[in-house]
Length: 125
Length: 147
Image (tube, rainbow over all chains, first blue to last red; front, side):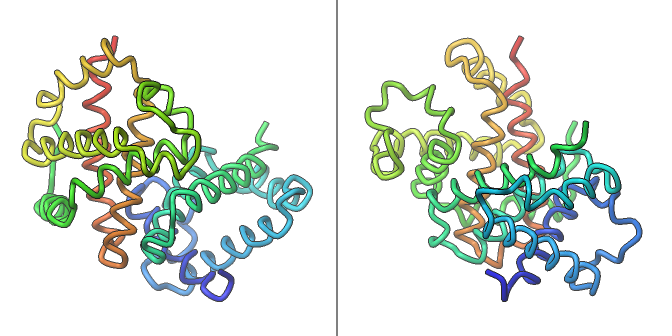
């Protein structure tokens, strides 16, 4: 998935901003219009972090500790937004993969993204 | 009252026009039962739901998937009146079927994902936004008569 990290990540972000406009409030400091440099760069960063989590799937809490602190103490994103982004990643994968995005693959990805988000939100309080 | 722009109406009808109820319905319901296994609680009489393969080949799941998607067609035909159109269905789901309304959103997400996999790149972010706005109105209408 890594070579298309930028494409998947930026598309997922764009889908989220379009379907759930309130999520844009966290990005007022960036240009998040379609195909912008910021959008592509940020999308790539997120997908690379997801890939890193997937490579260390049994030690998510330790692997993601720095990101977890960052989301809790600096970004302070309302936790419901993680679900919205996860949904848009899944929609993006479905669009790109068609029938290959089987129910079993969908279940596995959904479970992984939920676990990933739970770790990111762990230090919130 | 929900306001629909012309672009939204066009997008929703276009998506609906591309959906085959007999294919999308079964796939969406099966996906929901697989990805969110707790939703199986409402389908005890459907026979074997023990794994993904048995869910996907279960004839009762397929039949019910078609019923659900045909119900969605009712909303497409009555976009300016979804709340009152769905009132009887809401009563049914609350008083007879006892379905936790949070599960409606999960099924609607699965419908979106099946549609996305069928339409591919044609399911653009703008079309997704209009489609999801429509589904969220339907989900809200289904939960309206709960008390």
